[in-house]
Image (cartoon, rainbow, N blue to C red; front, side, top):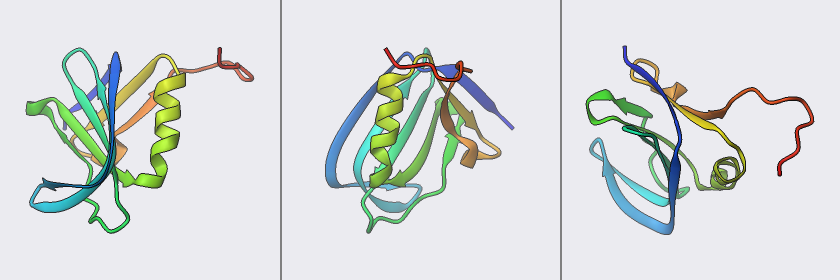
Length: 114
């Protein structure tokens, strides 16, 4: 089992409509993605068209990349998080890739965004 947690230093996002890609032999239709970059790892959050098959999440330690696949309707809440929270951490797990995620550190109750 390999796990990796890293600080997200920057991100890149893309929007499209039914952009075709192949993931582990499955043809998927991507409407958007957010790529979170650490110093040596990447975590890609793909947002799929409603007609697209949904691959299983993955973390490939040798390639230093993990991915999850979500409905396009969920993209706004992830964009809000990467835009407005700091610091952000990515968590990748090769044994339980369904746990791949981004998260914040502990924050005081009632903290307002500045």
